[in-house]
Amino acid sequence: MDENLVSIIMPAYNSQRFIGETIQSVQAQTYPNWELLITDDCSVPEVELVVSSYSKLDPRVKYFKLKENSGPAVARNNSIANAKGRYLAFLDSDDLWMPEKLKTQLDFMQTKGCHFSYTYYQRMKEDGVRYSYINECPDSLNYNQLLRNTAISTLTVIVDRAKYKDVSLEKGWGYDDYVLWLDLLRQGGIALCLPKSLAFYRVVESSVSSKKVRATKWVWRILREHENINVFKSSYYISCFCINAFLKRTRLNFWI
Image (tube, rainbow, N blue to C red; front, side, top):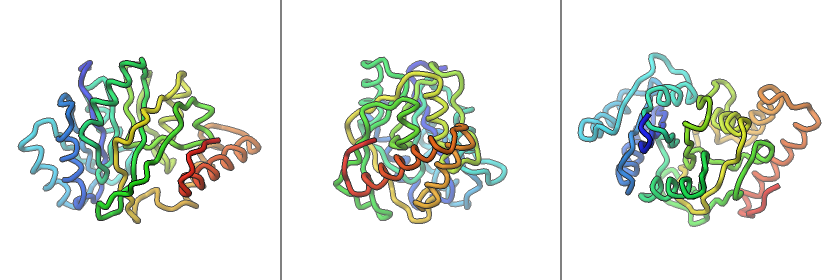
């Protein structure tokens, strides 16, 4: 394991319109010691063509392809299995980072002695037009707090995997990344927020998590079946989730 290497975990599925711009935002990082591990979840051929145009010129960009369509959790796990870095950063194939993202966040983690961090972020439209509003997050989250607030956005996360027994995702929960954050925080400690917007989340109408009702059902199932929380506590947590989602949409920075 390379102590100073950041392994960037990226699943890709039919993201040929956006993935080139996403790769460019990684290549623009002021912190140069990274590898980008892209796992193609059986996309159309154009995805491989776009990625290969970058990987041929930059060996830090690495391409893998699954034999069958298996979902983002399996794609991310494949990238994690091939990662050589101590630090894992997560980025989807249609989102973007600010150039200083990795350096600023690594400095923050090392200064704070932090093993799990996330940041503020901004949303952008499908055509790349960026909203000025910054999505702020709680200063820190432990396991119990995360049960009632899914505030951690995947494209902002960096994890020091040397500090955890296992960093891998479970397939089939909808919010597979949320399940991973719960698994990590259940092992102890807290996740810390760097209060700066360093990433742009692209709102794509066809994205897996775009439907609010379905997302609520996913969280309920995670609470009841994955976390084995009784119906009364789950009802409380899902109420908090809905309230926090509403507050986020109405741009009120308050968390339960």
